[in-house]
Length: 200
Image (cartoon, rainbow, N blue to C red; front, side):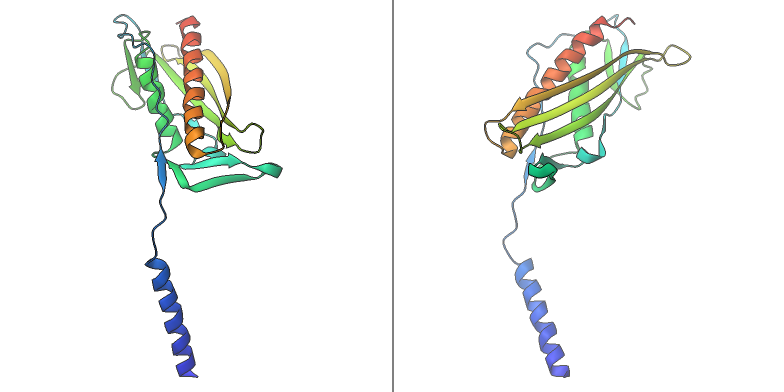
């Protein structure tokens, strides 16, 4: 009996060794990176803007790409990931975008020692590939609030909701990232225009 147990244990150990020694699965890493058509120098007399890290809906708050499939199923992709978490990635892109808008003297991150006049808060409500649709599409939506830090009650000067749905040529991770870049760029462009109309 002991010999049988020993042989079974040895077989399981060998099986584990084969699996561990197999060819590693390749993962691919992607980044949402936006490029402005025009970069404007900072406005010397403009306000200091603090951009807080964007919060992300729990459904999409993962480095793994998220897809919506048929019958309402959702799937995260273990092999195709964002290089960093979406909240950090999109927050960095947003700060860089607004810093190049020429509307602010400085655009800083949360925790900076610079005292901001204004604070921009945002939420990423959706960030996924709708592979169940025909044609498939990238879906991204955000909500923003502009807060006046000089008022006792931190008055909200502006709020806006933005959504983009970009058709995909093919339901692939690479095409999804290209479309998300396009969608995020369209949202940031409209946000910049709306911030210019806010009274501060």
